Length: 145
Image (cartoon, rainbow, N blue to C red; front, side):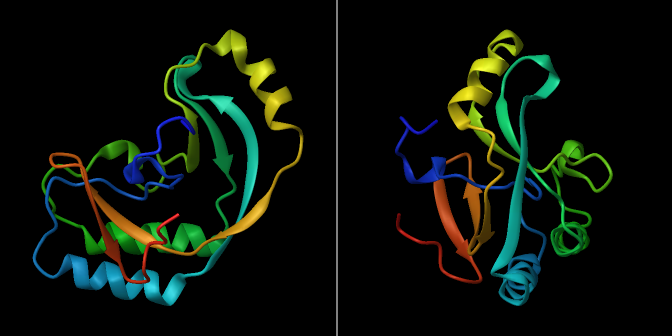
């Protein structure tokens, strides 16, 4: 995915997806992320979801990340188009590395990515509108890089 340099393709962790924010949800989400960020993160193993596409780097769900995820879902309760695979209890936190990947190539991907399990922090939050491919900052500013 590094070859696609469009700003909407930056590494990200999806907490939820909806067709449209319910009234007041955007302000509630901004307050949640302002309180939670920066949020320390540790990456886990590289795997292929569902046996084929996408190749992902799993994110270890810390208590703080799990709490933020649940709070985001509370803020979006009742929204149209809330995707169930992001729901608490079903969500698999991950960073996508490649969208179409064969399970047979997993070993090579792990060798390229090395065995290190990096740490870092989530420092910004955004909303992505798939219809017009725009990004809107939520809370703390989204970096340009």
